[in-house]
Image (cartoon, rainbow, N blue to C red; front, side):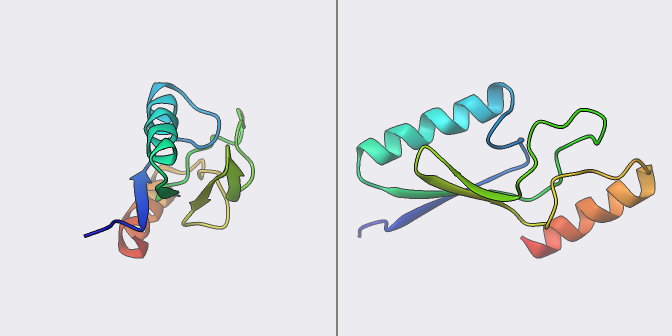
Length: 93
């Protein structure tokens, strides 16, 4: 059985992030060296509007596609709205 494509599901900010982001990108480089196609799916909004690093919800990093399941990467400033978004993110997944 041959695997055609690997999907990585995460709530880490992509393409610019912290340790989890770097770990994911390291895994992907290994998969690519073994000729496996990868795609990253980010199922939650990750960016605080006051401190934005990732603006584009769809893109590529080092030849690997990534996409957020929402049309934006920005979280709401309201607690209840963030919880509702998180709930619907799991449904969209």
